[in-house]
Length: 197
Image 1 (cartoon, rainbow, N blue to C red):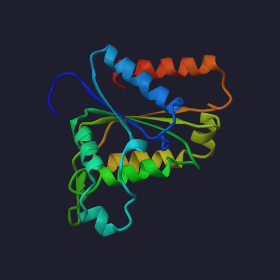
Image 2: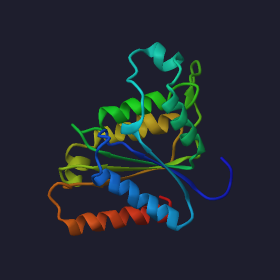
Image 3: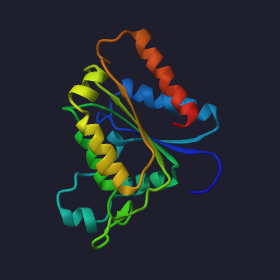
Image 4: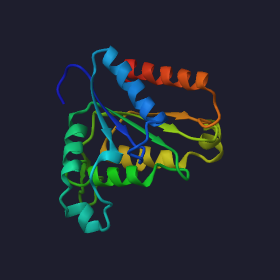
């Protein structure tokens, strides 16, 4: 990574390629805010990428990523700041987003195994903002359900390969709040983009 303007990669983790709902609007709001402060922005819709689920350890460790994943890896390498936006499904990220992360953050690109030592990480120096939408109240997910899916993404996926710092925003009760609250949340996310956080 070179000094200069912050480079932001926004990953829309909604698995429906036809969806132009809240996750898409949040991606757009963050991108608008980032561009207002002269940040460079790229955007990935994982639902539009052509890749399969990994089905073996050998494929994960030694297989060649499909072309869409190679391009995504190039975008990840380019970025200083990663924004991951997804809906909460069964307490976790959608399976397609997990499949994307497994494909993209594989050995040789995101980390290298070392004997008897912690893996060598290659994503160091890149910050992350995770934004999760959900039907339940955000406090219920964070404190009653302990946000296990989010913690797994932060600790066992992103920090494991060197990303940091990692911040999160939980947007709860999205199916029952009114348009005024949705506008307020979009403005909050736009401000996060302006701040580069």
